[in-house]
Length: 499
Image 1 (cartoon, rainbow, N blue to C red):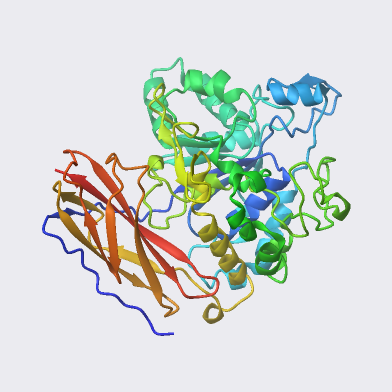
Image 2: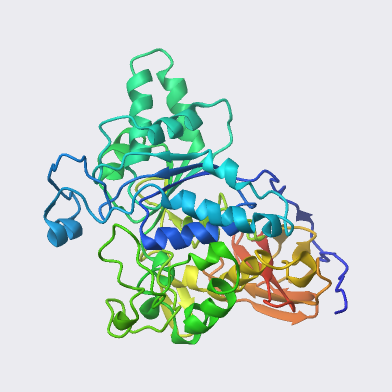
């Protein structure tokens, strides 16, 4: 196919201000309780392990999964749902502490091919070296230091200053224990203020729900300056209840035909371990994992399904937030991106969350939707996943790779009533054509009106309303989708500010 090389210019009658983009990859530690959807999230995450710097992989517990102390000690959940479901338990649906290494063995088998498609993939041996067991005996257990909590503690106290994104795929208890150990060691010393500031400025917690009570009981009380990204609604479109959360028109991207053909089967040892409906697989230790039983496909807990249908990746938004696809949302979670869209809490300036105040217009249902800030990227996410699965088995020249979208300036000053011309460009490593589109992310900007955007080729004419007020902002997303198979999409965000 003919290579598309569009001339990059941002032509307008006002000055544009470029915002520098950091080239450093975000550092991250994953804590997980090992549920089947954690396994599936882990597999997808490994295919993107070149996009961020993994610094820890830590087993933890949750309200749904804990090992027990081996003494038969009974505990009752602090969380209403699991207290009512399970009552007193000595252990609960514990999947063990070997599944990460099993997945990393499979990753090692595809690594020689996968790593030819992009720089920065860590070796399986390197990833195995950072696996630790954290606080796993009970839900919310944080009374004792563990190798996992000590590992997190050491990262928070090391001499680096760049943020560490602490992904919470289960409970926050191992992270809470690391913080409690830091507090115990330093609180009554002259260094406490300095240590507190250092840790609070480095740690960023991305939590999927509250899966134990340690955030509210300890972290929120004693470490109120730690930034928290909290996803309680948007993740459902990638979780067990996806059939209800996702518009029916988008279901094919999660159904067995797409998942089985493009990701799970004939794509190497790693994605073959991806749990799906009717796959005849059963996770050891979890008696409630019946999704793989073909006899249980109809009238299952979350609907009726077919073989290889998607089950859940409820934790994936935590690492999708870290992938730079050109939307600039890593440290601006209110911008919206592949990790969803969160807004700053009115009661806690260090907390960003979703919910009733974070709704996007869903064009499929013609309604405001709490999950649509994540749903809007679903097709692109799934096609990108399929491309990464291809990277596990295909040489570089036979696979597709994402295009790069560019504009001259991402921050532009405009006047009310002005007609602005945006010009973008796209380059593609596989010499595929790239179709550019320009659209307003209306829910993010402060300009209340929907603006007129007229697109011609690689240019868009944006009409700023005459009623726009000084300081109003308008977010225009420049989207480029290539013609490769599977088609891949990347973006640039232009923020227009009225002066």
